Image (cartoon, rainbow over all chains, first blue to last red; front, side, top):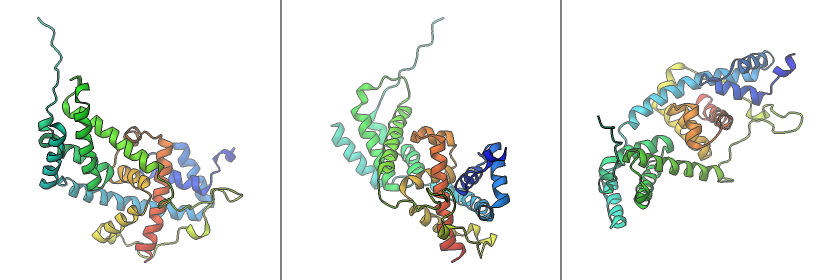
Length: 89
Length: 191
């Protein structure tokens, strides 16, 4: 019965990546755990992945704080206005 | 008692730039992560809006209508980068066929990390290194990865906005993350 649960490293790491967003299904998680029993490399990949997720989340937070203030410059808007007026005339 | 009449919205193109350029620019930049590109998309949206203003039926607000045009521009952009061939192709990490299909390619196998020190995970240098690694991905991988991981959009929303399937999305996320892990290993953790 375990034959259906056997997956490759490519598939295992795909599930692992999906799991970083909490979106792996129960069956996928079982397959992943079974794969870990025999694969040290994918276990390490997962360990790194968990740390990276933490890092990406921190980065997401700091990026969003910066982006909130991003907009077009006054000059860019004026240039756009001129182009736009030409077109609508 | 009279039936409430539906509000008919009107377009006022002469006020678009003042009223909507910031809103549209923000919508675009969180998706494409590039100032000039976002600016161009906003411009194209206004121009396309003006051209098709006569088709506006007044059923939605002006803003909703403009956003729907911008959304189409973003899908067009995604399709364009999706069809680009040959440039910055993502490196394969697993054998694609043969008896080793799906196994790690030897030189791409994850190495153990030397300075996993937690204290470094908030440094500005690391964040810059991540941006650098993301910029080395093919554009579509970078775009989907950023939307999912940095902007933290729902899978469903990304799929709808870019017109891709969830399994499509997970393949892209998988390739992007595998590639990024390797890039950070070489340039940060084991550097």
